[in-house]
Length: 282
Ligand code: AMP
Image (cartoon, rainbow, N blue to C red):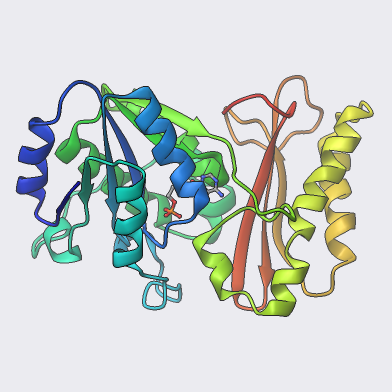
């Protein structure tokens, strides 16, 4: 496994890789959710590349850039064990050199949900993803449904900018108690960690309501809200039931529905979602 920090060197190592290349972009602090993407990239391509980069451009002023968990040595050991061919782990100064001034600006799909709460976040995400695509030129790139709006925006960007990379969205990997794996789970106090599976349970209530035939958006949102309300440590930021194509909030569902939420536990903000009908794919 080659580990490279310099973008030009990463490009030249990639050009010597054989056959199709699958890319998994990450911010590191790798867990089994990330590794599920790596395994899929390995299975579907001749060569695999992972990137580890805590992208400053996607963090807002009061956000957790400085304290975001970093563990490059541990990440490299896990990626090596998975048989990854190349790890590109650049420094911020080589991704955003002095004078940097060109951005990928997302359209209206970045306006609701995470985009509304984190101004500039998706501009930062799409810009770095476009740059990683240009350095690595993957045949396929792997993203998690965990960050559903991000996956939708990356797919939109690939269409809009005629990028010849296949965007593959992989299912959410969860802990045994249902909590979606996330690097940010490390911020939770033991008490908050015990409370956090309420997100998964609230989505379960929505799945149940959907299964019983409920199609009214407000009732689906209410099913989740009621479960979250019973957990005093959980402070919902938003609960959404939206059209996965437009991200417009649903009045009455006629097709698929993306139910997504952001919930605060103290200083930590957790995301989760389910796509209805369950088992359908983004
Ligand atoms: P991050 O390091 O948080 O930027 O995540 C890198 C990639 O891993 C993104 O495409 C995420 O959506 C994906 N990911 C994060 N957590 C999970 C999870 N629990 N299951 C599946 N994919 C995940």
